[in-house]
Image (cartoon, rainbow, N blue to C red; front, side):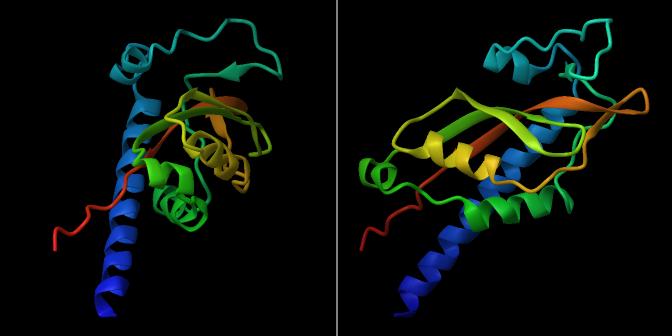
Length: 165
């Protein structure tokens, strides 16, 4: 009986660690320059924003990156509490990283969530569902002004190791 509970707790701790590690990579990639390794890996253009400024403009590079309420640890807890491993993905042993892009609007709301690269088995849809359900973020800033910002988020799915007993 204790083995099942400790295995479940161990799996949850492992998933939380994966989520937090993914978020660290995410934050580092947001703060890096247009030539970041993340943009080269993902083949995502991270060019300079156009010189024109409109209220609907979405910035890829900002001075202050949008932040989830409570910071990275709170985001990890939000993902842990809300992200469910799809049954189909579990049954098929699907693991990997789903990459999502979305916009944080000036009011902090999340919009335009899309899959950049998925892994199937229901994982893509589940990651989108959780991102769309996110509470409002603290919006990003550029030149001291609140702006719409594009975010890129890796959501990693990993099954716990099975015992060989």
